[in-house]
Image 1 (spheres, rainbow, N blue to C red):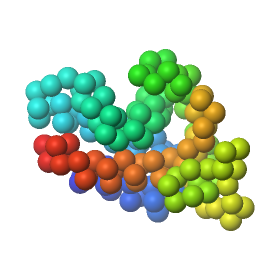
Image 2: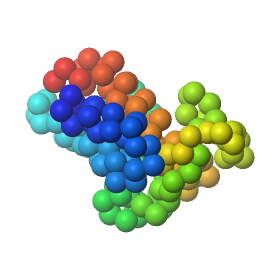
Image 3: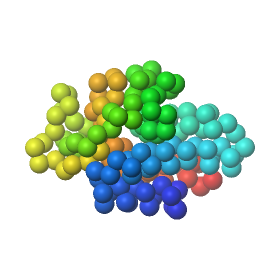
Image 4: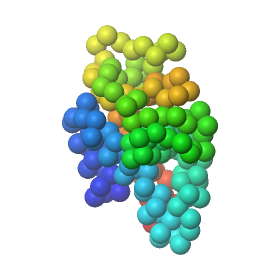
Length: 148
């Protein structure tokens, strides 16, 4: 977490329109579940589901990570994310609100910063940098995950 996820998140913060950093950060954050599973001697899928139960944005991180690696998401516990494609990640305007959300129609403020955004198959728009930073913060707060 300290040597890969946090530095990638900081780089992504510094370069918010970097598509490669968006995908890489999501991949590293998602595969943190593998580290926890290895240390616990448990199943990575089960750990990922446990993390997502406590950190719901982890589902979106997982979807982006897998779409980025496999071109299109064909398996995911949240059916509304199936069909997400790597090409759905684009440069666009960041979230309208500090919680990472956009207006209900997907719009934001005209002066919002440029970043990588994704419109998921369920019709929701996400500020990828905000999701990465919030998942990193949540994982740092959840001691049973972070202190493995």
